Amino acid sequence: MDFIPVANVWVEEEDAKAVYEVVRSGWLSKGKKVDEFESNFAREVNAKHAIAVNSGTSALHVVLAAMEIGLNDEVIVPSLTFISSANVVLYQKAKLVLVENDPLTFNTTAEIIEKAITPKTKAIMPVDMNGMPIDYDAILSVGKKYNIPVIADSAESLGARYKGKQVGEIAETHCFSFFPNKAITTGEGGMVTTNNSSLAEKMRIILNQGQSERYRHVTLGYNYRMNDIQAALGIMQLKRLNQFLCEKEKIVKRYNEIFKNYSNIIQCPHMPQYVTQHSWYMYAIQVDEHKRDSLVQYLTQNNVQTRLSFPPVHTQPFYQQQLGYSNESYPVAYRTWKRLINLPIWPGISNAQIEYVAQKVIEGLGIRFK
Image (cartoon, rainbow, N blue to C red; front, side):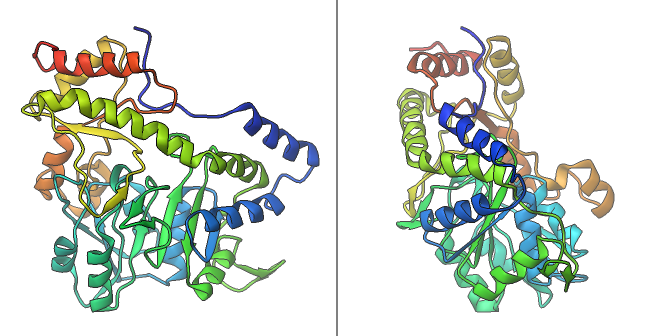
């Protein structure tokens, strides 16, 4: 079998044509295409405002900046997440408060979050890990109880639904990423959605060098603008979002059908009842932590690419040096990560490739494939 990547960007000829037309127009920076992309995106997720930025990290940061999170303020973030979720807290010179996760969903919970709240807590930043929504009602209830805003890191969950609602319309803010392995891509890029008009206006000023109008700088700002080249690609990609999600659902169904016969050694993704739609950023299985690395090596030898998800923030050298964490500081996050493997999942992968991957996973665990 030829090499099977863990993810594969889906770009069509019409996408390239849209980008080419922008290049030919002579207007390459932020302009009408960004406005159109924002409008389309807001409509897609039923949000009042969508604010385009140049990365998912910028999306998170611009929200914290607009909320005026700063020195000595505490921000709660799960350790099992990509590093940018934590980094943006330090950008604001705030205090990072890491928390554990549910080992089945990989997401943090309302109960875990509430135990970490102090009088200095100024924001809660849960993450929709692998594209599965957090339990929004429960976590928003905690936020409301303590009057603390919930900033949803929805980088991986575009298209997901929670109790029928679109991820993007539920929390005060949602932050999305358009990196090439996400549901839609702009090469690099991100988006914030909110129904809070005053907060949206503050974010638009901050992401544009702090300008309220041209060359009038009213606050400290950043160059977080998306350009029309990226937006043109995003507009076209967004049209195929539902098709993308349907393709991934088919892949997940086939993996689950195969792995259900091996439930004693392979744990398939867990889906709580409140999840109406998973976006399937990744298909993550769990195996014995003592066998995971050898399994990954076996899959690599058989031309199957995998990912080990994101090592928890508290295991990263920088955070261990700066904040004194050890690998065991958050044992649930660490144990969860030690068992995780992300398998290939992308529109266009064939049934033969899916079955080959599944077969090699089972063989790599020392079991005869049935």
